[in-house]
Image (cartoon, rainbow, N blue to C red):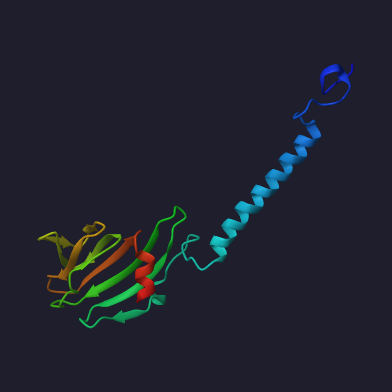
Length: 173
């Protein structure tokens, strides 16, 4: 039995039709090329300065405390870009009882504020809402807002900034 790879059985392929060996070589080359490109992109992300390139723990002891003029203490946790493309920044703040809050400010990103302990007043859009320990506050993009400790003890909360000017904001500090 004779195997042919083209019309007439002469071993010649019609124009545009590759032999099996040529096809295998090109497929191997394409596979190696794609592996190299994707591998270098992944390596660039993990080898770069983005702390969110891989799963990890951010140790509380390594978070430097910064005291604001109003007496609140903030600890920067992390800033980076998720694999899905969103920029995020996370910090924790403790406001002592009776602390004057930061002035209302408008944000160009979204925020989730997780109240760990104490009670906050969330002032936004002409109203004030109460957020006790365990509550989660959502601050929409562009919202003019402020939070104030209205409890008898310290109020501790974590702010998760997402998207928008998140990376610019940290660079400005």
